[in-house]
Image 1 (tube, helix red, strand yellow):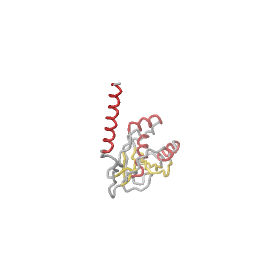
Image 2 (cartoon, rainbow, N blue to C red; image 1 turned 30 degrees about the vertical axis):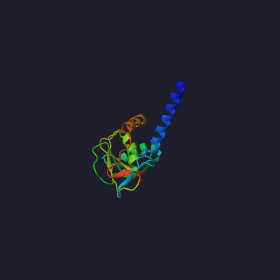
Image 3 (cartoon, one colour; image 1 turned 90 degrees about the horizontal axis):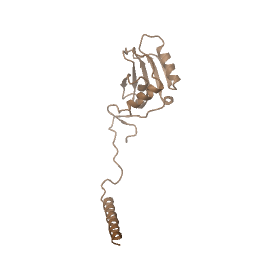
Image 4 (cartoon, one colour; image 1 turned 45 degrees about the vertical axis):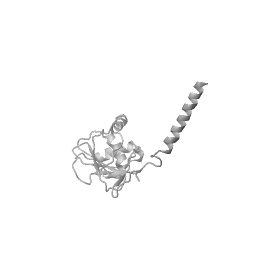
Length: 172
């Protein structure tokens, strides 16, 4: 009988503790949402599937028709290849590739970065308004990664990082 009284007393104490904790909770209500400062771009960090990624493939090398062959390779991997040809910026690219994109292409550029095994140089333009990523092939390019290599590189890259002076697309 005495044990039953002790258990009952513990239950009452526990109930009092819970009621006090709930009534004095200062964290009630919605969590504050970070606001995006005026003038900052809203970056889309979603990692898209290949079929949902739009790209332009440009050649910045002396190898003829390289943009056509790399573009065909991307198209075989289900990318939406919009344009192919020589780099309209006419800039030399000594490395593997350059990825040019705006706020709407941040997540897509991350997927493309994996196809270049993290060796492409990113060129983010906060004023660019489309979701197309320009893939500019450079002199050090050999081939695109296999599916397994791409998946491993994507894991190593992790989640896309917000570019400077931008907010996540879903930020208020």
